[in-house]
Image (cartoon, rainbow over all chains, first blue to last red; front, side, top):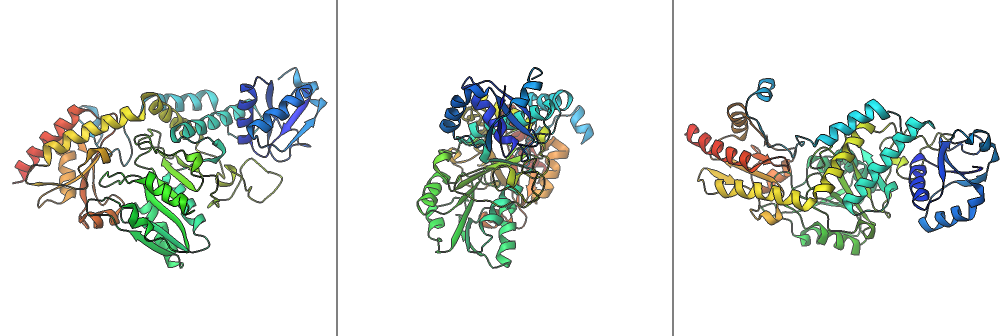
Length: 81
Length: 392
């Protein structure tokens, strides 16, 4: 996993997680990396190669999010996720 | 009371105040949460906090299912219906104007309104008949250029009469006036036959601890997408933590501080129980209890029953009095001699009692739930008849 979607609140994260999972996209909730997620304590990480799918699901479901980042630093801890 | 609960027969007819008993799943879910889940939702990034956040989101989903609503972010949890009503009334009248309400409203609606009246808000009361029935025309003939809010109960906590809220909602929608519906007595029993997604100027307020079978300390509202509410309480929300000003998006803006997580989980279990059984079954059951009770006491010359007797238009509440007897005395005798618990007096609703003509002494109110039985009602009928004889 090397992509991170940040949000404004954790309620938005919980809601988005359900929608992504329903659409068979692999996501995991992680503590929001401070430098890209100052607003909210949690974020969703995903495989950046699936960015197009992510954007499609976001648009189709009116998901409210803050930003999408390429964040390969996650790979160093992703084996524990 | 302690002896009462151990061996003697007790009959609980005060479900309009709070429901009892609760489904087993409600306690089990709360116990499970405290023992195994824990966590503060929306705060930390560890698994316990995330699990708690997920459970709260699932509770919002259950509320959505109950009210035919699709936006979980617009489900707000409060500590009771009173808090939700206050948020709505203070927000929607913050710039002054006129508010329309009925002559049967609970103090959780009337007291904020009367306070705001002193601050210059104009208050119009749509009068109900002495049976506690509301004609929608009485509401709409009061509409003024500066009407900012209509707030109405779905059913009376004194007479049990159901208001024609769907018709009123349509009228409010057509006139673009916000409508707040107090479903404290109806949530979980009487479905709101509205697609809330299409009524964007409506707010549906509910309490968790009555017919939704949740614990006390829970409640909330479904906020229509066109309604803008301001918080009464500002504080930490676990979001926008880099800023020290209140976020302006839902649900965070209206949920400062830690939620009653354990309570909300219990509430979810209560709602899921109701959805499994079906509101229609619950309504039918309560209707049978009310019919049995009214049929057997209405013709006693010493008894007066208040409100419309049409059980198609009534929830599981019966208010009555025994001739020449103070309700408070009857309440005490019913409890001490017969183990029947009910609420007597004014039921936090002086206006309803003024409307039906029972002010200031009030009435004896029996309020049934899905967990009451025909046997208990038969026992109550027998007890009331015996009491009437004893008091002669």
